[in-house]
Amino acid sequence: MMKNRNKVAIISTSLGRGGAEKFAAMLSYILENLDVEVHNIIINDHIDYEYAGKLLNLGSLSLGSNSLFKKIKKGFLLHRYLEEKQIDLIIDNRPRNNLARELLTHWIYGNRRLWFVVHSSKLDNYFPKSVFWSKLLYQKAEKIICVSNAIELELKQKFDLVNTTTIHNPYDFSKIEMNNQEVFADKYILYFGRFDEKVKNFSLMLEAFLISKIFLRGYKLYIMGEGPDLAFIQDKIKEFKLDFFIQLLLFNSNPFPCVQQAKFTILTSRYEGFPLSIIESLALGTPVVSVDCKSGPNEIIKNEYNGLLVENNNPDSLALAMNRFIDDADLYDFCKKNASSSVEHLSLKSISKQWESILF
Image (tube, rainbow, N blue to C red; front, side, top):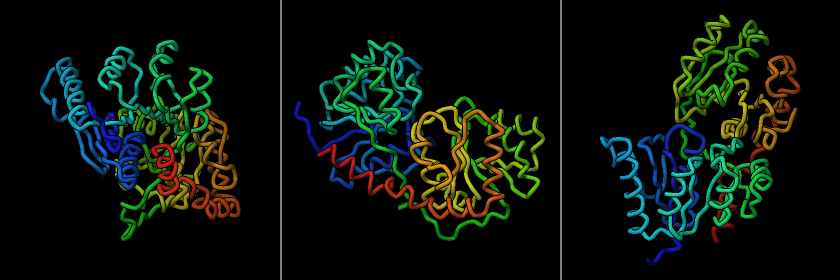
């Protein structure tokens, strides 16, 4: 089979409502601007983000099938598409922790060039539990692209891989309409992202907000997004009797007016990869209060320079940080002044150059 070195497939779970999915959409534009023919292939029928290039939606093509037949049909359609379109390079953006599925997927991919992206420091999401099989599956990949330096270091230590490189997640506001912004009446701090307690640790966020008592000084907490744990968050808000001081907002593919007008944004995750919410907040000039979780925040936030970085799982320290940004105007203004320039190296233009250097 003849393959075309100018044809690249980005394979993702979907193009909807997640950091890895947003990255895939941005990557499609990066590659298209490098004169690459881009093929977006998604497993599930969920699209929220704009993308460049062509689309193969395996989810919509297998609607109505039973679970086993649906998986078989998706595999067959993927194999046929890669052959027909003469794809040379596959950039795999999915979670990859099911060994049987990944053995079959590698067979479908064949002898094409393979790049695998790792978006989380929780390696169990991206590699089978067996170190032996993980090394066997991925040591022959052309590249394993990590979104943070910490992830790359851990990969090298755990699997003894030498084909790794780090390319951080970029931010891109070029397709976002920032004019005619909505004006929010409240003074507020903001979380925006997925509603997933196991990862984002809303228990810590809400407890620290309660301890801080900044709501008694007129500040509300806005929580924006969607996910499986909406009911959990609502119950926790009632448990802490914070109903009047917290507002839940629906997912918005353009949260940036709300981000830009926040006093600061907040992240309380148990673990991360390279969180886009921090990058986007700083790029818009909004400082961040974040826990120093594994991995990502300490590669973006310089404590007391563009935000505050605090010990994880410590609600008192987090509450203190919230109050510092409200009490200490000099510290807050200094961090706000530095926010945007501190992430200029993560702009789409800058990160595109790194992708160009490894592609060509």
